[in-house]
Length: 555
Image 1: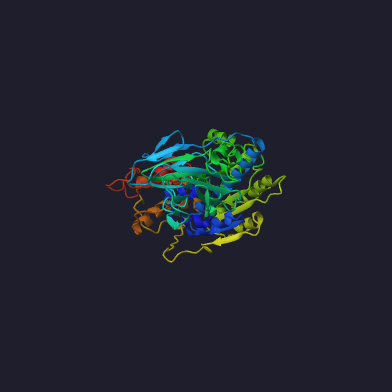
Image 2 (image 1 turned 90 degrees about the horizontal axis):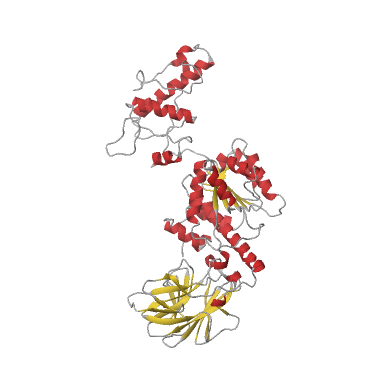
């Protein structure tokens, strides 16, 4: 069993994260995911890089998908109650290459070296259905049910259930005695009872003799469609999806699968307006974080289907493309507060169906009186609705006054997950404060002194042209001294790398120009075996640089 499955995460999401090498949940994910899936408000704090995006992204995708599927099923029942069944055949696109198919129901395999399999095309979400397999030749055969994500060798993973001719049932690679042995000439019935959404049952029969309950579907598969499946070694068999030799009362042939029970009928179904629209809104403090979260959700949700989830980005950038995505009716929107608020105000984005509001990096989001704007969004989503909105806050810390005010205003009886505690400086980090006084000159040695003069923001004239005791002189002189101090500190501590924070984008540009000039004028040109272009080689990550340049500088 996957570690994520124990948290209640569905198989489609588990497959996506495992392909990205998320083998174990991080502490913040292990604590937060079950709480969000449980429907309560959550306030979580953990260090940067601890997996917070996955902690809210996984459950957000699953909650929205389950809601959309329930709405789509209801829409099919109400709008297409008499829609004809799409039938069932063996799926040419879901078979091992060694499997030969004929007339849609016949399958055979001459390979005796390994297990080869094939699935049917009818994905069962609900109801009571069955099919039969007639064994036509000696050989090893296993029949049963599996999800689209399961292995074709059924019974060897957590996404499929098998019953073999040796009298063994199997799931997740565990084989147990069950029923009787069967072989050439026998007809095996495969029954699936999903009439109770909370307790699906798989059972089997041989030549009309019912063998009793074989498996109870685990909670993780509650919302996953199951398809007929057969595998074996050196075998020949015929599946009966429509005409059964040994029908069982209460179970319909899987070829007669009703539209409301058929995942294929839900894939393109549009629920009614009360259930569609934006159901989850994720707010980020910056465009970069919004883009990062957007890309993460797209990857994690790539296997969710029937119906699929539309995720849209709402932040600075390509306005036309983002408006186009909004017009398609996204289910999850990731964006910056300013842009999202603007779209809501202009009627581009509707939040009337919003069920889940997530604030990422909440300590940054709620600064500068932004809480009032977030409350406007919550009120807009609550107009004319008695539905309680689920709110989650994720932050590097939960202990600032701004965050506490946001928690009190936005949440109801939240569960706190604090894996960081109050802000502290680790023992391995040493702080050095270097005051800069305008009237004391430069009491330090710097390789840049006398060689390069820094360019400043141009608000004041050069300090040499200003009265020494004026405020303008003090402000300008400090701006002129600081770049020289940066060089002096880099040399004094023999820094191979360092991170310098500047107040504005212009200050970043000016410091880059100054440091490049100090080192001889060669700008950063990418990593090279020969080393740095100059001793003070630098790059800029400021917001005014293009995303492509920032990605290149971080590579």
